[in-house]
View 1: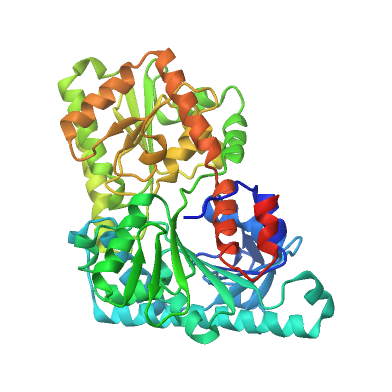
View 2: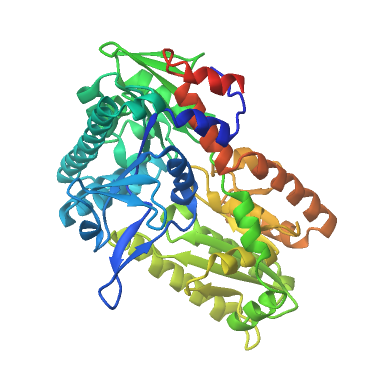
Length: 524
């Protein structure tokens, strides 16, 4: 397998400026809506992947293809369904794909999130398959692919007509970067339309399960072929790459897998698919700035607002309300430690910040009800007039308040039953600028490979051991906390979102053997 040169993101983007970059995602980076006065306003990216990618697409003057879900998106877009963004200083093109309510119900809530999501997290019992969901998934993937092809054709026409553009860009060289499990078929549809006119790359942001799980996926072989239309397929950690290659080798007889180079060749294809691990990071500097921003009285006010006594430790959990996050298992461990170690009663408070997610899906609504029942039971069982063991925060928290909470909390609990990476763990560490906190991290999260040595590892399904690890974290001496958090912060700083993008882009560009521009990346 080829190794990255370690080029910086700026160095890689300076090379990528000579290419046509097309990013494809379900979620759009800018959303137009109407305010209460029927004026059009713009929602901007607020953290995560979209905020991290946005500067890169701006620098390269690329195109971002995404679902236009804002109620004013059509009015803000031109006849080609495009709008230049950001609005105050346009730097790239946002091209919108329009989806009907039934598209969203079947493609997004249906096949994407009731088949692929639970299956890839090895929670087969949560899978609900309906054939119409699969058919709509195919149709929507085709819509996105057509939009990509249209963008490539348009860019080619501009290059032909404008000699200045030809001088700046490499004629005919396009990189298409698909994001996540929503687009398992789109790369193949694009490849069938344009052949080798573009380099196709995809990052799969969730786990890839073992073959014993994935072989139960309806239309699994077709999904594998769709993904193998990419020149590069990225996943978070090597174990997911190995699982993917294992699925290919056992489910596609026409595929030749090179286990040393981690490549796949299909009998009827003219390209190889390179499978690589790219552990995703977060914007550590931005998070640290937000964590440092609140004034000196922030933490005292926060405690007072939410009824957290001053003289006790605070544990925090920040999650989407998703059954993969292990929230009921976490609450069970908290109940167990309060039962088995009564010395902790009144000595620590657990703060749960859970954001409702995919409430259109019955399993998610039931999870919300279960979490509410568990919290109510635990508080009733152990709480007093002066202290409640669990505080549930439903309020919206600004980034400063959220990362301030991470900074001042004594420990964070990440108890995922399965997770591609779990960026909350990395965000907590990034916000720990005083290095006083402890991270309890599920060994089933991809982040465990990066952070497991310095975090307190847990198995979320083993309630008794989970509780004992929580006891260990709460009892940990300050010197040990500082040593562990220093090591965690060092790991997170070297695997941030900028280095992740640089490595993905560099690996994609170096697959093109005909373009001299790739040499620039390797030799800088």
